[in-house]
Length: 406
Image (cartoon, rainbow, N blue to C red; front, side):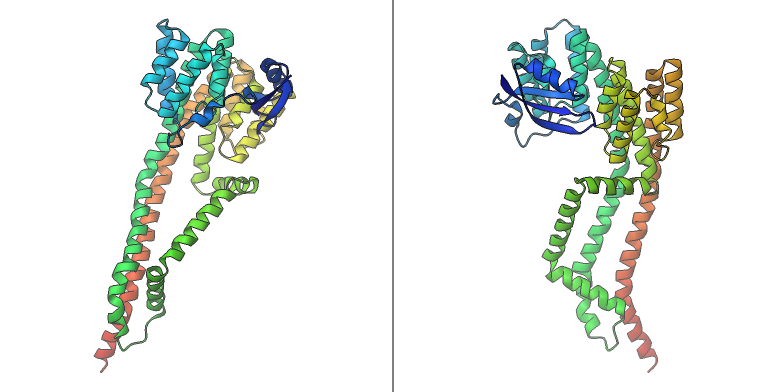
């Protein structure tokens, strides 16, 4: 008997890590599968954990890196190149250092008799669970090229989705940063130049002027307190967002905010439909596919909904029945299209159409959100800068009026 360390996703969709005793690795894998867990990796305790070799300065591969990797893999394998040789070629020409190192280590593991899926499972920071699952299915059916082609499309769509949101947000974020920088410059450099002039005026300072001067003085003399408060606030919010209570709070807030809530729902619908279509097309059972889909959801409410759908499917209910209960999360079109797909036996096709539709909708929703944010940020800048300028003008105007009354 030996001790094996495992990394899996349990039947409730939670990521679990631990150890168990078994005669061989295959026995440990079977024991986990019998408990309803989706196995990501299993290795003998004390065995070399290749993940620790990663350079701490290496960047985790992005969806774009993985899509290129999958496309190149298919091209090389289709040319009749052996798997180990193909991985060596990929490792030498991959730009991302982390992905390149993991690929070359996978090649060594395969030469030692390990399966490709197991070799990849030793690098969970590089290869996502969905890719591991499809590789395992591809090895079992002798269709690795099909599995990698599907994953290439999946990663390409995911990269495009992220790029759409990122591209649209660049301008408003830039405007906001410039606005904050302008306010800081005004308070720390411009306002102090008027301080001595204003103090010599024989007029009572308006409350607005007193407040702006006090704020300027505080930022100049106590700037480290401002930075400290900001740093603590970021630290607290970041850690709170990782707790269950934080995930519920921010997840709910995300859904309630105007425009952002609509974008969140459409993004989740697009990602869920695309991922489920890819998994089902690779021959995975619906329940197992939903388990993986739930872990692609960044919002805890959508994750819970997908897991509930999985439980409903296991109990014999149609997938569309769960989406009919969560109309506050998924748009009605999702329920209708999935229902039609189940009734006609064309679920994969309907999911593909849903994914295409909502990916376009995400682009439109993102543009609407950014179009609304831009004037809001500009208005914020105008009001703030105008308030600071007004605080300087008011006492001067009061002095001028006083002189005219003499």
